[in-house]
Image 1 (tube, one colour):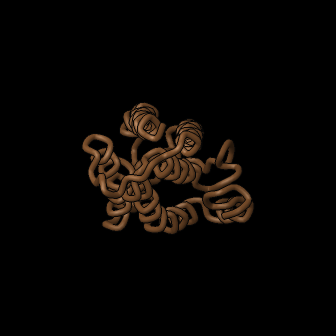
Image 2 (image 1 turned 120 degrees about the vertical axis):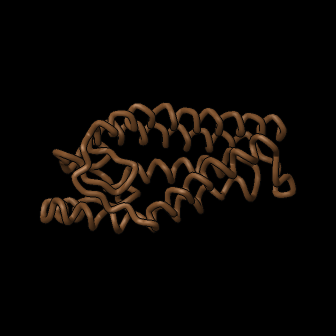
Image 3 (image 1 turned 90 degrees about the vertical axis):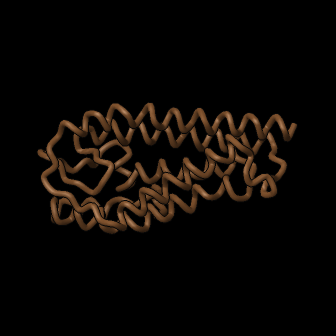
Length: 197
């Protein structure tokens, strides 16, 4: 059972990453056509993106492809893999809805685009950063799907680096652009987890 659960977990992780890319790609293409009015990309911003990529794609991808580091493997159980699949599916749903809600406002970096509007509906009515919520769910899903004490939780580390390097800057940028409207929005929403944080 544990070997089958490990294999299923790895397959589901790969399918989740492919699903993530399929969701993101059309929005990336569309974003290139919308003029950027102001950008605040910094070295810290780039470091956060790299950390997320390494923790949530590169290192777990190496593990799935090669089994390295095998010495950190542990026997998985079917119910843990099932929880991982649920977390990853929820992540993809939030990821898709967040992109769709942002529409032309979406950007991979800290940018204000032409005719940028404050989005406060859909998942944005509950949290200011639902895209980061989806990354947290993805990282949790990865930790549950990959039965390896290194490759599983490294996604949580990558997520944490991205989140803590970017979220304050992102909120300052939005305050600068939207002023009191964004401050009011901050007062009625949480950052990442509805009703909690």
